[in-house]
Image (cartoon, rainbow, N blue to C red; front, side):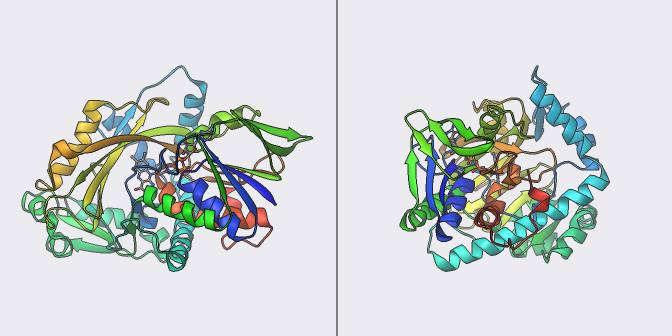
Length: 416
Ligand SMILES: Cc1cc2nc3c(=O)[nH]c(=O)nc-3n(C[C@H](O)[C@H](O)[C@H](O)COP(=O)(O)OP(=O)(O)OC[C@H]3O[C@@H](n4cnc5c(N)ncnc54)[C@H](O)[C@@H]3O)c2cc1C
């Protein structure tokens, strides 16, 4: 079958590879000059099934109200005269019930753990250098009761999917990650919740490496080509039109991240995806003990720190303010403040490269994977804050669906 995959972010690349190894003839069309130059470029680097739970929860609204009063808060909302934003927010609020959380969280964790399994398979098969660290992810809290509360909140769904979690006191946090010593001494960290099987790695480097393997498996990448339109005949997709040519296909996969919305809107389909902007800053590490090897999630500040070889990256912020990727200097500076607040000697602030990206978020947190209303037109998008975590598993699931093979996880929760 001739399949065109739209987008070469981490989702498009993993999808193209999964389809090629199943014997399909695959072409990837990407507007940028290489793989993973959009949201997959400089994300938080965490592969975190232990954090694959919905943002929409009963606590989310209360937290968001508090955050909206502070300029440096992890969350920012600018209401716009944009029906799509209002519809998305309304749906997000509808997902903030306990009943919805109990329904959404297992679907997300199931996909994330399946994805970890698929990523292990890819690592067994290929030797891709993406600064992988298998040291776990440690969520840090100021007080022990906060760690216990978090474990009570997510422990059930994690246990049901074999995601181990361990509570650590302050001393155990430092024993695990000596770079936390200053933060513990300053009273910033009093407890931790460790997910020992979670890992980290550079999503862009991985995408570049896997794209190379995909080419070896027969995939053609067309970079620098912008998809303009989907072609169809009698409700069946027949291909796409780009800025330079028409491409015929038996199947088309939309993996355009936040840009999926506009393309699908052009055929009358409204996707429940809104861009949630985040920031990251990446800098060279000063000395080997000043930066963590264990990835850190600061639960109250809502930021993450990951080691990428001789670099360290901090990522955070969730700004629902529209589609722009311009960098707000105050938001970027605050992300760096978060890093240096926790690891004062980590490196030189002036060496940091600051970046922003748009998370393709659905209100429920569950991505859209499967065939759309148009025959032959498939979606693999809407992975929000977990696209790196869920990429390999989402690709495996969609490739099985397209190939008519029985998927290894239940596809129903992700059906568009
Ligand atoms: C600050 C931040 C931190 C994050 N941290 C993590 C993390 O720690 N762990 C995790 O799992 N996830 C994380 N994420 C989320 C993750 O990065 C995303 O879910 C993931 O990158 C989405 O991948 P994608 O392939 O769907 O989108 P993208 O990477 O954006 O890929 C879409 C591609 O489509 C291309 N495109 C768009 N329009 C067109 C067109 N018309 N024609 C051709 N090509 C087009 C774009 O150029 C782009 O390359 C984070 C995100 C942010 C912003």
